[in-house]
Length: 446
Image 1: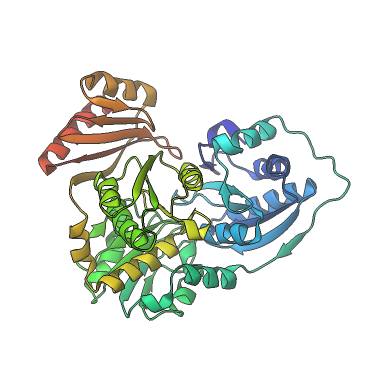
Image 2: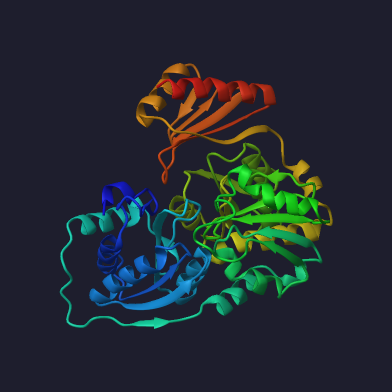
């Protein structure tokens, strides 16, 4: 158990094979949640990793030892937990490491109403209680019940997106052997679109490829499947299915910025003058398109707890991140890969055009995509970049955002892995490639 290594900015994440995450940690977290969230009941879900059931049982044991009643939701996508928390006004926690490899695990926590818990909104307090742990002293231990939230979840998402707005589109889906497969067939049973699925069976060893569609090599099997048929859309989910990644009808990946722009236009056509939240790594095209569509763009840090809070504070109807997280006010401001897929299908059906054509309307700049660097000293590498770009515009809302005029980039430390993440954008592809190499040289020599 190593709280210092696993408590991150907006969730808990670490390795089970090194002892950083273990059952004792989750028992202590369960005890701490009752006080930190002032919760006398809590819903608990989990993903399909080999370690998840044991960790979930320990978490529930801690909750009950501290006097809380527990609703055990079983193996579910993370957005099902958010739905249940929002609909039932109950605190929630889901044992998952999202897109990380099989030896990782973690925990995402929310207050009643699916309100996120991050470092500044309770996670630091939970860490302090775990570190200075005191056994609970309560008169009565809580109890646990099992409940299947999926039927209510399906009703909910189709209240957000009318299935009648979705045409007879052919969709290829890569579930990544994660949790999307728990609900996907039932989702497609309720609409006209046709599903062809690969790797829909949950398997926490992720035998076919890592459940991280942000890495393009993990999209290869989906793109190959699309090449074997006449598909309108390809969709890949990460391990806990709170993120969705899209492939157009020509077999080309679609960036999170492009999806954010298309969905923002769709949402603003229904919510005139509304606010749209985007993180600082999305393309400059996103705020431009939001403004042109009559909305107010709001720039924020990366991470679900930050996005959701800003949406709540501003009344934004939608939020998008470059990494495939999409947040909807009608979904308790929570991110949902399944709901993002439904909205994209509705966007395409309404437009009556293929995604390969729709994307051209919103893609204005050249992008590097996200590039990861493993460096020995993240802080030193970041400061060397600052020194090398003294004449550029720099802000530190989240890592370093640097604007040189012809190109602009963000370099930030990952909140979940020991990496620096670089995203470069510009007017010219050669300038973007040149900037990537310049930053690469700086950070790898640090």
